[in-house]
Length: 367
Ligand code: SAM
Ligand code: MD0
Ligand code: SF4
Image (cartoon, rainbow, N blue to C red):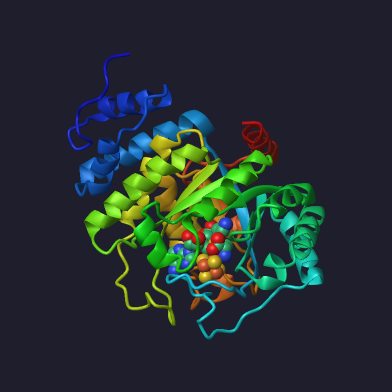
C-alpha cells in the first residue's frame, strides 16, 4: 500500500476515496485535522467523497447487513433538568409509566416484528432510580417475553446496580455524554456530574455489558464551538472503547430552556456519523428514525450508519424522544420494522440475521 492520503476530500477522485477507505480499514487512525476537515467541508463533491468512503469502510466490516432496534420509552417521568429535553422535570407535560403487564404485552408483540434488540428507555424516574429492583423486574420481563437482547437507557444509575443489571439480562447500556466539552455539558445536563456519567459506562463495561456513547450535535453556540466540541468528543470517546457510538441532531422542544434555539441543519450530524465510522470502523453506529423519519434514515445510512433505531410498531401509543413526527398519524409514520426492511432493500442493504447480531455483541462483551 502507498503512503498516507494527503489530498483533501474535495480533491479526491474515486481511486483516492478507495485508498483513503483502505487506510482506515487497515488500521490507520483518523487524525484530528481530518475530523475537522470533514466537519467543516461544505462542498458537494467533498461531502459526497466523505460519505462514499464511510460506506466502503462499513461494507468491509458489516457487508450489507443492517441491525434493527425497537424503541420502548417505558417511563417519561424524570428527576433531571436537561436543557434540551422535552421530558425534563420542569416541563409541565403529561407523563406515563408503563405497567409490568403492559410491558409484557409490548415485548411479546415486538418479538414478532423481526428486530434484533429491544431498547428500553426511561427518564430518571425515582420509581426505578431509587428502587433498582423495579428496573431489574422490567429488564427480566422484556427479555423473557421478547427473547431478544436488551438495551437499557436508564440514565445515571448507581454503580452498585450495574452487576445486578447484567444478571437481570441487560446486554447493552446506552448513556450519552452528549459532549466532552465540560462547559457545554454543564449548560446542557444541568446539575449532573460529568465524571459520574463516564464512570457508569466504565463500570458497565467492566461488568460485561456493551456500552453506547453519543454526541448531541447542533448544540454549540456557534459553528466553531460546535466543531471543536465534536472533535474533542470523538477523541475522548475512544478512551472507553464503546461498542456503539451515535450522533443525534438537537431538535428544540416546547416548554424547555432551549425552545427558542434555531435548529442547525442535520448535515453536521451526517458528517459526524461519517467521522465516527472512520474513528470506530468496526462498531455499531445508529441511524435514528426519531430525528427525521425514514427519509432521514436513508441519509444516515448513506453517511455510514449500520443500525436503525427508534423502530416503533404501527399501533404503539408510546412516545419517542424527539418525536419529529408527533403530528403525523401513527399508521403513516413508517417507523415499523416492515417499512424499514423494505427501504433497506431498495438501498441494496438488508436486515441482518439475528445470529449475526448475537455473535457481534458476544464478541464485544469479551473485549
Ligand atoms: N434519561 C436517560 C438519559 O438521559 O440518559 C435516557 C433517555 S436518552 C434516550 C435521551 C437522549 O436523547 C439524550 O441523551 C439525548 O442525546 C437525546 N435527546 C433528548 N432530547 C433531545 C432533543 N431535544 N433533540 C435531540 N436529541 C435529544
Ligand atoms: C433513538 N429515541 O435511537 C431513541 C433514543 C435511546 N437508547 C435511544 C435516543 O432515537
Ligand atoms: Fe431526563 Fe434523560 Fe431527558 Fe435528561 S435526557 S431530562 S435525564 S429523560
